[in-house]
Image (cartoon, rainbow over all chains, first blue to last red; front, side, top):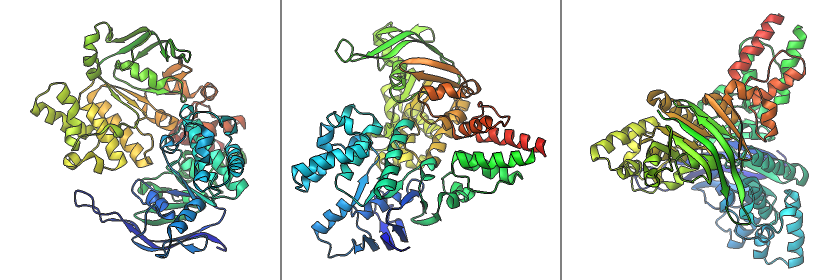
Length: 290
Length: 285
């Protein structure tokens, strides 16, 4: 990999003992990997597999028990990191969380988006320009003067994304940002995420439970027991249906259908990640026999 | 067993204010007894408002809610007993856990019903089993549980009241595939063993297609469709028109149909699709 934006070496993390004296179980265990600049990586894993812990380590909300993390060439786990270094890291590595209601602070959409840059002491002309540009990036410019609490879940999440974009990050981590949305809201947010990645070149790390969303990424990482179980393109990863199921995950319905048709003796060669690909494979085979 | 019937039911948000919105519009509906009924519709279609009518959390502005033929609002002081008979699990119920131990949390409902210690113990143990929760967790703090376990503990708290009708608003939202599966398979087991009526609200058409016998589709405060799975999923155009997603395999079947393959849009599970395509394939050999 020519230009890793994130490089992780031997990363481990343990939470402190819980009240019942359990715990001390490593959430991440000697994890190493690299993420290329401008890529779109989906992170899958069942609850408790370490996905959210990894996300919080990437911008130093948590500090690792051992191991190193490099972001944009700089070691963020270095003890010499100053408070300012941490702030500049967080500017570079935005995060969008699950619950849209927990991330909005202001009573007007544009004030909410301006909150981050205002805290950086950026001149007001510049803030105005940034707010307008990021709101249009997420397709919410016409809502600039609306009240956030009157918006739908998908709209609120797009405002949260705009707030992160206003800090001009190179990378955004989405921690199950579509989990609480309905199908329409999920599509709005996914479209916005794809646009940021493809058009603005922002590196995207997306933690999700929805296999159909992971299918849109360039690369899927599957975490299990604190380490990387699978790492590859959606097509390569979804090929491993039995393994994914054994660790509480799944593959998209259509992919599963193709796998079962193959097991039943139909020859269907090729990628089967999207609905269109699956339809194409079935059509080819059926038309050949006709 | 209990049957819920809604008659000419209407409800307005912000009634008598300039922001008045008609949330439910003259609804006539029977929720059949002893079945799993799925309620679907996009955000704002009135699903959550409707389920809050079923146990008297909201009072209709027009029309009646009948539980076994009895208007639940006829004697207002009896509304509490309606809430014991129709148990409602709200969205993200784990935010409502509050007791020191899981046991006490689940026991809260039965205790409010005025039941004795021994009866409460029996019911807590029964509901924990129905919810698919390990009994070892009973003495833990609910806040030490995982997300999926918290959700199941909250559901157990409602089941412990032994309601005739169990209503769940988005019971699997935000859970991983294994967590979803655990919630739904336990609900099906609960339904089969108790024979009770279950009403589930969900956005996941895949889950609805798998688990519900009877489906109700809502749009703009109205019921637009009601019937069994075959009936509802064979009308995928209408579903798309009211802003609903259709299961992935159904979309796939529609593409194949357009290309002249002899399948129909009424296929909504992977197993059905598998069977249909294999039979076409074998015939063509």
